[in-house]
Image (cartoon, rainbow, N blue to C red; front, side, top):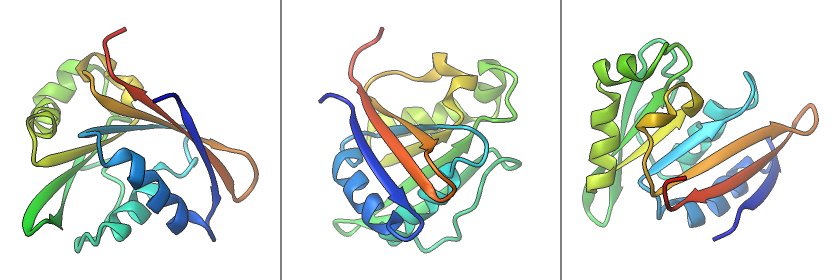
Length: 152
């Protein structure tokens, strides 16, 4: 698949999350890049709401890893929400258990949503969906979805 773009506002974010999930559900790892305040956590929160996650969704900036549960086909599926903003390097991510979260997603039965993936890109391996969120106005965002199927 080639890159796809979605545009949305806070008023249309629920519809954007539904369209996003139609594409993203096939990827065990989804990365979210964008400037501070671009809306990465806000979008993930709306996505989790769509997926009927029961836990409160919040930024894992200080916790580094938040864990949510969704039910799919009668089974509980874990969503790991990682925030790499405060990481210095990949070694710190590994020590925090983030590589284990990614492994669980690739093995199956979990999803891994990663904010600020540029802080430790060497931990990412295909397949994953790279998402970039750009502010195009005070309340408008454009999201680019780029599947990463092979190593560069």
